Length: 146
Image (cartoon, rainbow, N blue to C red):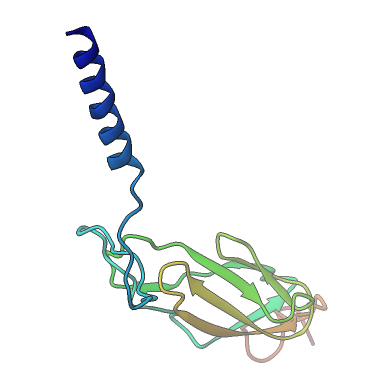
């Protein structure tokens, strides 16, 4: 009796191990389809900047927070990657803060982690000098000028 119990236990253990270690079935066609997503996952379908061009005047406006619109608004994964084509002109942080360094033009690019959708925005950096005699945005003579 003891031997048959041990034999039966051993067979059950072997079957359980075989069931757990069996690899998942593979597609005989060798498909490159992505793995299935969870039913509640909402995939990204696009990304866009609100403006095609943004202007900076340094040193007054050395930083700006950039934002993008991710479609659809209820996408599950809204993470993005940022980059600048000319980091001598301006850089962008991982949270979307653009820092301007010198006059010139660069492109800021955004890419979604989900779906790798992209968009770009041109950043134009100019220098702004204030010589103490004129007020920015006022026409005519500065107050007190003769």
